Length: 626
Ligand code: ADP
Ligand code: MG
Image 1 (cartoon, rainbow, N blue to C red):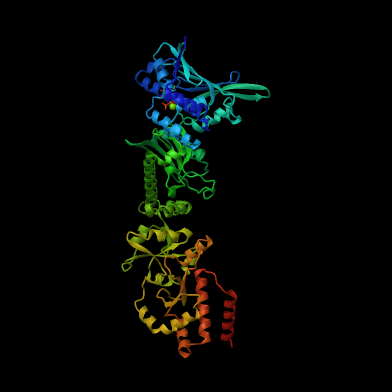
Image 2: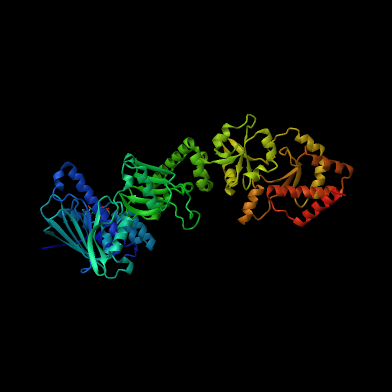
């Protein structure tokens, strides 16, 4: 005779919640059952290590799913350890897990659906999730070393019945009488739906999950075969030396939607005291087309003991490595853990730190040993690293040595900051020089580059829009400050002050002529072949940054400009002569404006009055040919 027992009070409350659940992720019940079956198989396999005869008559460890459309039942069974009578009462009648009381207290106080999902995520409800989809659940189980089986049955309300029963084979069979109120997309009697769920959540469970599969071979003729639904091999659990490069690559392409082999693979296990996990990470070789679109989801997939928990877990990756793909498997996470809970999870933070360090080490070693390959990688993902570092400048020390820049040194190779430092000239004590422009050519045409080239100073070329913003935030590298080549703080010619004193009146006059356009007119020692250049009066906002910010509509004001003249240029001497003859000469006004416009052109800036400039040039040509 079956014995009828009441569920423990807390269990009742929990069941009540599950049955009337506002929790919408019903699909997960199957994952929970398969994960329990897999645990039970692990246990029997472990026992059989000592005593192989345990498996004698039933040696193929497996999970079977059966669909019984006539009765509206779904059956999940395993040949694992099984449970004794007492164990059934203990495991399926109470919530023995610690913190349950606390869980229920919080559950009662939870106000929204999200809050409930969070709590379920935090504590896990495992087996009881079957009552979200079933009117009645029957468990038949036989412990491996017992004579008799046990039958447990409940509709998930207040009580369950339990009795001894006949059961030939070791293991557990769970029979779900499915609710009739399930939605159309919750048809758990459909073999395709079951296959989909197994592939999604349980694909890497290491035991075969089998099912009778119906296939129409001819019209009206159905063939039934035994089908294994999961691919089983959780590649990440194998040792590195057991896995071929090809296997790693295939796994990547199949799971992460890329046609290209990855640039690098990072596979490691951490067996610390606070957290245990395995990570299999891939650095892609190509940027996905969707990377900068809304569709792109950053993050690693999260597993617990080969069972899938969630995809794109963002918290596992820092922004600057947002392009990394892969997965983390850790037994320390509950299957139901929610994203909200994860964000606060300490173990997750430790895992993330470990992952970050491994990625940095891997990239550094590539950079040191295979610079050319690293440059290819950088061309694809350098932007992401730079943008990520810009957002997380507190990580400067960790990331700055991964940065590459173009420089005046070589057209063919980029440079690290470390390499730049090693090549600095003896008298280049304080600054790392940089120049900003659309591309290499535009920078090399900048008038200020002339003297740097002549003196042999290396200049970093910042060609990405983000570069200058990042450099400003970085401020310095190993104590050497980043300085734009236009900076007045860089002194190349010591006699500049004297020259400026000599031509003071001329400079004041030119400034008068350009009074709406520039804040100041001064001499510069950065020019060699060009007569003029234009710089920003405020080093914090260069003229190039101004262009970018204006495009983003983030700059309400215009940067003030300074016109710089080359005192050694023939043009300067002509200006001086004109001034000496007649300080108020109209010609001087015209020349000042032409020179100003010319400097805008060279800097790649917009000419304010184009027709005026055209007129001036025409006049000049007419005069020259009089
Ligand atoms: P958890 O798996 O987190 O322990 P569950 O609610 O999923 O929690 O399961 C409760 C317990 O019931 C398990 O710990 C296990 O002892 C037992 N159990 C559940 N399913 C099986 C099974 N198929 N075979 C053996 N024991 C099981
Ligand atoms: Mg479980």
